[in-house]
Image 1 (cartoon, rainbow, N blue to C red):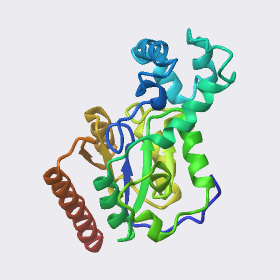
Image 2: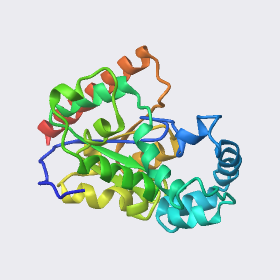
Image 3: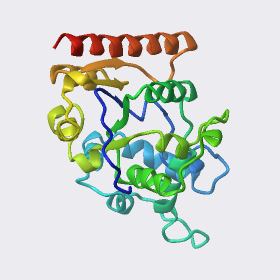
Image 4: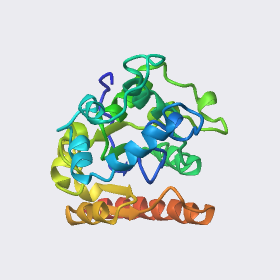
Length: 247
């Protein structure tokens, strides 16, 4: 991702990816297509893979790479597939992930108010590579971003920055100070200036213990829930402003 000048924010919202913005899996073009020649093999293999919590956490921390994961899988595509097919689809299929469009619209509106929007995700090297590929493309115009369907590329370009566990080398729940702390310090912010949107209670609790605010949400929110979320974010922003004025 190309370097950017650091904007000046007085507050920031950290947003989770899986379970909040999207719930689509890796290799979705294969797993969601029962006619694909590798569908059955990959479905069975990934079910076993993602039950190995220790290995998945190592992958998300960057201690294990996508190449090592692929080498461990008991899948051998026939000669009709390129040798790097599964590795390539692991990255490319991220671009096909469906996102919560209403939540994205709320985040756009919040960002226009001068609040930083940062993706904070426990995720793998392949997902980070997909984000970097999306951000390397030409920035989308305002008109193209306002379409009815929100693409992965559009969401990737919404974020001011990205914090991914495979680069931070720690999961959010394990050490919030290590995961978020350096970024906050670099932007002259404290945990009290930050709000986390995450689907996992353990991540929200860890963030709150560090001094931040958190709202536990999922990608399954109804329209009423999303309206309430928008109100909660606005209330948090107003309370932050009032607290800053009193200091």
